Length: 119
Image (cartoon, rainbow, N blue to C red; front, side, top):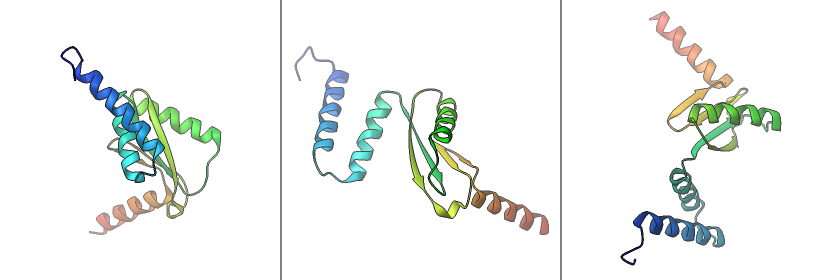
């Protein structure tokens, strides 16, 4: 690092080079995911994860992504996964916030309510 080089610019350049390295190699997927998260955090992009019991269409994805963007208060990168145990509905995690609209989650909350009322 030269005396005139900004430490933030150096870190940004390092992350960019590392991203290229990860993309070009057969690195561990967890490392690649962590790197993407670091780059997103650097760029002010939040991460959201959507789980559904089956594949969803483009229109549903668009609606969910708009909600995730509103919750995050800005740009968001959304990843999707399939979880058949949800039965129906969707779960959306943006940062530490979990919105559980799944049938599995609703049944669990109903069970807890019944058990707490039964005393």
